[in-house]
Image 1 (cartoon, one colour):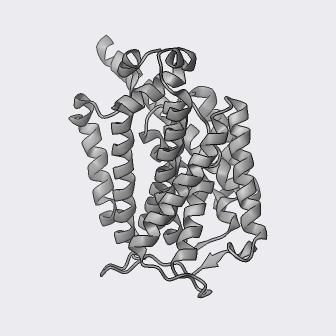
Image 2 (cartoon, one colour):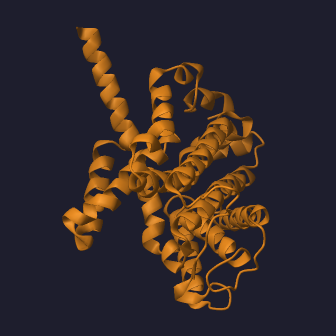
Length: 337
């Protein structure tokens, strides 16, 4: 499939979508959410869902537009968190105490470089082999962080990592929520823009028919590695927010269960549209916050697995697919009446 043939299939903010009442209702709800939500829901649910959604957005960009499923996106985010702890300040006093305006870009750059390195290995494979390679890289980083005490401080990791003051207490739920919302919205719009750019259209055409795109003169591997670089920037900056949110980073942040969580969030929400990453994150955070008290910690993963399989079984496009089916069914009923 050529770039031109892909254009009509690109999800994004068309003129009709921008003017739809539903879009503006969601935007308004996100803006006024802290005004009626408690500090717990604002911080532990709202901000956390936005951060996880942004990390899942990096996976959605790879899988939805590039056809590459990566299990190392939380590893990318966690590595950025480690860079913040090592170059900034932490409770152990081992940080280099560099200013935040230098630490944040460096953490994002390191995350992007790590993602590029992952991409250079992963683009040589396809399908299940890509998943296994990215999983192996994620597990390798987890084991390195757990066993290395000189740089990563081993199993304990780093604590006491606070966001910069800048005249605002970013640990306060409302300011941190709006910071997370700003970053999530910026990357959401960036992904939508990239999807409609020549690079994004070429990437989607490569997803659909790499052999044909290669015959047309496109460098398939270079486009895929560039996609990993973009996803690394997204996951890296989200990882900075994540370490500020938790106030710490440790091997548990990048454990295998956390790697799989991002995949679950992206698939449950839907990988055909950037909004699916955030929809899946809200669904996951609500379950993570409340379901564990109902079914217990031992059965929580079982519940997640059952719901995951149920959603995928009835809607391969995730919650967004279910929403689309409901809208189409409702519109057909209105036409009949």
